[in-house]
Length: 217
Ligand code: E4P
Image (tube, rainbow, N blue to C red; front, side):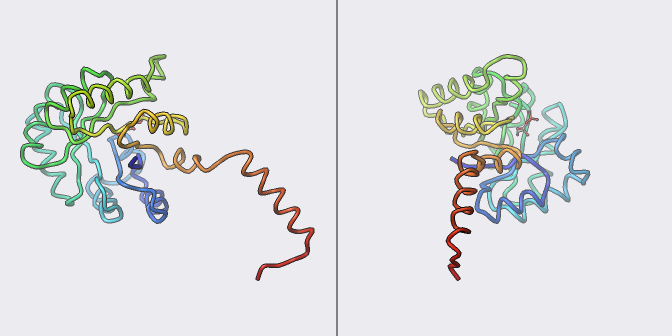
């Protein structure tokens, strides 16, 4: 399973990348806003830190505009993946840009039917949003399972990039189902390390070790 970080915070990306935890990065207009930085400048910096795919999202709503923006964003670095929304125009842009040899991430996917169209249009990645489905009392993880089944039935090469991840359980559940990639905020990835029994066990070891009066070095 590949780990993408869902952020435009370069310090957070650097920290996780140094630990070998980062196979790629996803950004979106909201994350660019949160970073307070210029999209091209921050995307270029991220591409210099991470060797894997870095998703940069178009903001035009028409296919022509998306294609123009996508080609422009792709010039930032060799590891840019162009992110387009799952609309009819987004699929048109996906087809044109993927035919040109670019990597495409089709985002804002909320149904298996949409995921089929993205695969047919040549998407490199499909981004089903788990958390936003859960937010409206639908089952985000069930969507990951449906897309996995369909893509496997027909040997679609599009990778399932489980997105809108809000919890550690989202990551482990997506991994069990067989999502190819997860993209999660740095805080969620870091919280994967936490376990109450680890903390309790370590406290006990520390206390017992102090009682021995020994030192290792
Ligand atoms: C994915 O590419 C998106 O940037 C992201 O996962 C959306 O997550 P959110 O629903 O928490 O905003």
